[in-house]
Length: 265
Ligand code: ARG
Image (cartoon, rainbow, N blue to C red; front, side, top):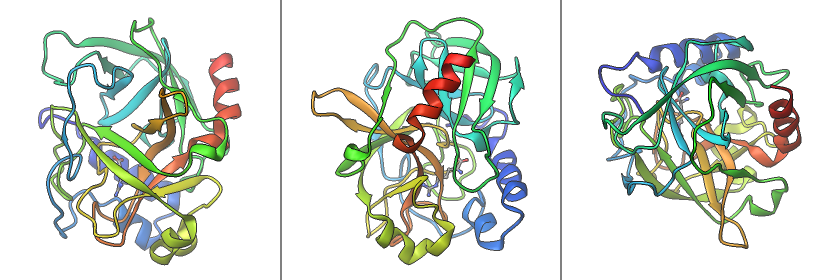
């Protein structure tokens, strides 16, 4: 979710992931913002979200997404962060679909907490404490694995096409089905950390998150009809390729860790 004038997240994300993974060739390729192999349209294959459709969605200035976990805490991906500690360098934009809108709420970060033990493989979550609360609805996170199935909504300001490298100023959304670990491993093999990651995508490709969507939520309705976050956009080989699902942090696995980290922030 970047405007072309925003700081370039893609290079940074790539560099961080590459370093963290120890430059495993395939993993690096998987985050190449400029690799060839075109896919289709928005989020990739999405449509514009309506104003206030996902009021918990936020954009991060380094070119990632996030969701309001508390009014003053954002849940995002570890690979979007530079590590834990005091951090006043991130600008969080909320309250708008269009990043250029004059109605945008912009709040600075105060502190970051990266998942304990994060090393570039799995555990891809982090929390940002905000300088002040944002008066928007928060997004509940899944605390059990019972919602790790069915259809999920993805949303973000990331690239609308693999390799585009510029994101979009207008929030895009799409729907992707859950993909079982066993199926997901047909493509990723042991690069998938089954307990800590879950996959989603269409076998035929065409719809997916992409560079710049990282850190944003993947969510669905719970039994009470309320939005519930089940994933965090993490990585994938290219974007929206046939037979290649997107990989998301399995939020239910970390729900307790996230809750206690948020309380300690
Ligand atoms: N790592 C990317 C980012 O930093 C997200 C890639 C998601 N890729 C996918 N095919 N679902 O923005």
